[in-house]
Length: 367
Ligand SMILES: C[S@@+](CC[C@H](N)C(=O)[O-])C[C@H]1O[C@@H](n2cnc3c(N)ncnc32)[C@H](O)[C@@H]1O
Ligand code: SF4
Image (cartoon, rainbow, N blue to C red):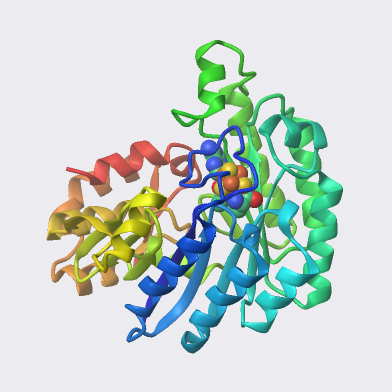
C-alpha cells in the first residue's frame, strides 16, 4: 500500500518567508481542479493507506472545488486522510465537507500565538482567528489536529516562543510540528536579509529555543518522534513517516513528486504547464530519476535518522541484502565515538548532541 500526496498551489496571500509552490492568483483554480481530477483518475487502480492534501492552502478552494476533489478520493478510504489548512480560511462549510468525505486529520499552520509576530511573517490571520477555526474544527468533530509552529523568526524573543508553546499545549492538539525559520532565496525575507533589514535570531538563542521545545513538549506528554515533530500516543503522522521510511508514494498536482519502483518523478512545477500537459492528454511528469542502490542506501540513512527512534539494522539488511556494517562501519564507529549517534540493540539513532548537529551527521552517509 502506498501513500498519495495532492498539491494545491493556491494561497490567500503569500507569507513573507515561504517559497512553496503556491500563488495568490487563483484565476486558474477551476481549470487546475479539473486537471487534478484527471490525474487522480490515472492512479485509481492503487490502494492508498494515507492521503495528504497539502499546499499551498487546500482550504482556500471554493466549496464546489473542494467537494469535487474530495468526492474523487472517496473510493480510496485511506486509514489516515490529512488536509493542510491556513486558519484564516477555515469555515463551518469547508470543515463540514471535509468531515463528510472522511478527512480525519487536519494540519493547521499557526506559526505563533503572538499577533505582532504573525503580522511580521505576513500571515493573513491573528491568534483569535486561529482559535475560532480550531474550536470550530473540534465542534465539527475533528479529533486529530496538528498545529504548525515556527521559531527563530524575526523579532521573536525566547519568551515569545515559550508563551506560544504554553498556549498551544493548553489547547491539547494531538500533534505539533515546529520548524526553525529557513530564509529561502527568492522570498521577501531573503531580500530583507540581503539589505540587512531582517532581525534574525541569534544562533545560540535558536538552539536554546529548540532544546526548550524538545524538553517542554515531552514534559506535556508529546512523544518527540522526528526532528521537528511531536505527537500524543498513537497520533504520529503516518503519511510523513512514509517519506522518512523511504516507502513508496505518488504525488499528483503541480510540482508534486512520486517515488515508485525505485524511481523518483516530478510533475511540471508551473501551474500553467501542468494544466497544459493534462489538457493535451500528455503526462505531466517533467523529470525522472532512477534511484540506484547506493542512492537508495543513502536516502534510507539520512531520512531514517530524522526519526528519533532511528533506523533498524535488520530493516537495512532486509532491503539491501547486506549488513549495514559492510557499508558504513567507519562512519558509524566514528560518529559513535564523537557521541553523535547511539547504537541500541537493532537501532541506530541520533544522540541529543547529534540532533543539534544533524546535517553534519547526515553528510557522513552520503558519498
Ligand atoms: C504548507 S504550510 C501549512 C499550511 C498553510 N499553508 C499555512 O501556512 O497555514 C507548511 C508549513 O511549513 C512551514 N514553513 C513554510 N516555509 C517555511 C520556512 N521558510 N521556514 C520554516 N518553516 C516554514 C510553516 O510552519 C507552514 O505551516
Ligand atoms: S506558509 Fe502556507 S499560507 Fe503561507 S504562503 Fe506558504 S503555503 Fe501559503
